[in-house]
Amino acid sequence: MDRLSDREREVLTLIARGMCNSEIAGELFLSQATVKTHVARLLRKLGLRDRTQAVVAAYDLGIVRPRSTVDTSGQVLLAWA
Image (cartoon, rainbow, N blue to C red; front, top):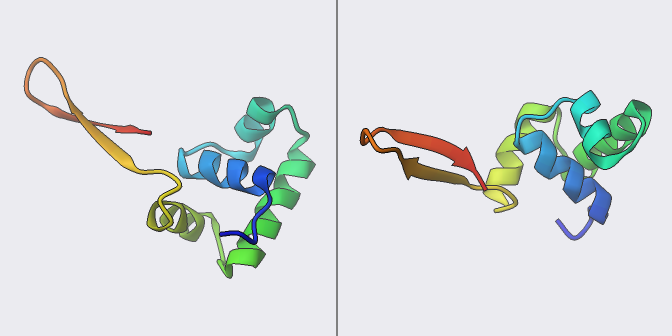
């Protein structure tokens, strides 16, 4: 994980939260091309082949974690930290 730049970690976090490149670009005030470059670099650095593996890695590395909450009806709702 130390191999990733701070920006690559940010992008990985947003990928794990389900954002697409255009959403990430808007959130971080970057061009979509720059986001694509960050995605490609983080995949390469972590030895991953796609965004799905990146999401799994983000959870495995503790970058994001599921957080369950219970609503008033007793149903468990999933949210992301």
